[in-house]
Length: 489
Image 1 (cartoon, rainbow, N blue to C red):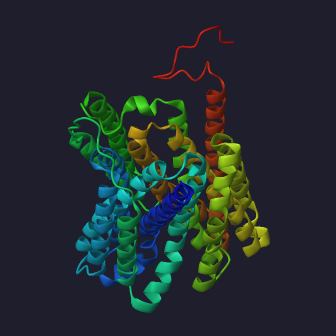
Image 2 (cartoon, rainbow, N blue to C red):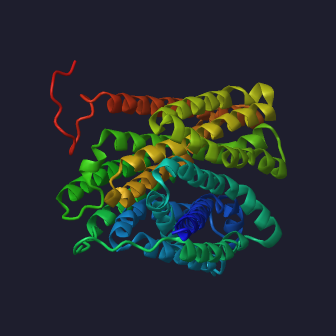
Image 3 (tube, one colour):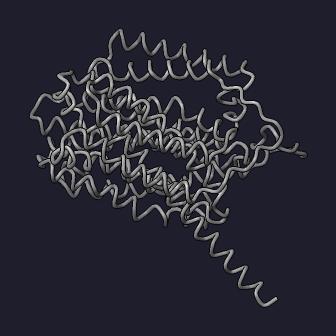
């Protein structure tokens, strides 16, 4: 009898160690997948020179990765729900690592673009299943902190890519930006194999019906959207209009296919849920704004303020540092005060940072850029923890994979939009300023972050409406809810 407390303590310690191993593998998976999103951007000029290609051609090194993630991330969540998340995550990490080696050894540009698409598939698996596995392995009262950690690693990976990539290219050449992820991938594969819990056996007999038609329509629609947003060097013309009309047709076709599919890629009744719809919309808008800082920021710092490449990297590092410091405390705030309220508060902080970025850098210089960036990034860390926690807590256990995929889908749509549309806003505003390069960059910076402020305010309004919907039972009627009796005033 006396050994029982000791055995119980030992079991609790083993569970704690297991959760730590699991969180280590999941957070590093999120970091590596996010790093792949941004590390290649800084290498585009070197790739154009190495392969004697135009900027439009080498740009697809970045686009292929984002499109693969955006297209497949929902499918991956569904496959994880069916085949087992541990098994699929291990396969995704291995695939990402192999594709990284293929990218580093690419003999020509077409090979590199294809390998980047395969790498994006591995990244889709890592992003979608990392959040889904948190719900299985972390106690509910600690979910916010765990989501804050994943959000921190994701933000660090995305923001660290350009500076790390630039240092690697300067020291070892463009191949190093891909080869550096090979040993990291092997380390994560080891940690995941050791720390992830065994897959639970599926209840009953589950026969997978993969929605191939829906996946193909989604891929073609997103590819057309990316093409429409990148053709024309910021000038909207007839080709862009035709492509956007094709995107609209593709969206309608996708909705039609999904409504008829026996096992749809996206269950439309899930998207009708007000809280999930709010989480997806705000996630896309916020991702658009954060990608804007990565695209517009370096141009303004170098051309508007005349900083050297080394100083640009140093100033941009303020974002990853703030994300690293704010992520876990943000998760604790979410656990204590509630996800929905913290999401609204976070968007208010982000709106303040965006507005300051549109006004302060010109009169205050570098300090006027760094301080608003710190405010914006701190708000982003809080939003990531709050929004992800709120959405995943509302999801049923058997739907966590697909909901995680939808969250990542919305995020990647925002990344594509931020890199293309917001880049076009910056270019248009800068070109319309017929003056020096510095004043043109300043005009572009001011206009772009004024638009970003509007986007964050829209996200805050959506999030606030979802809080009202949740608190008012008369507005919270959705499928599966019990009937509400009594008058609604």
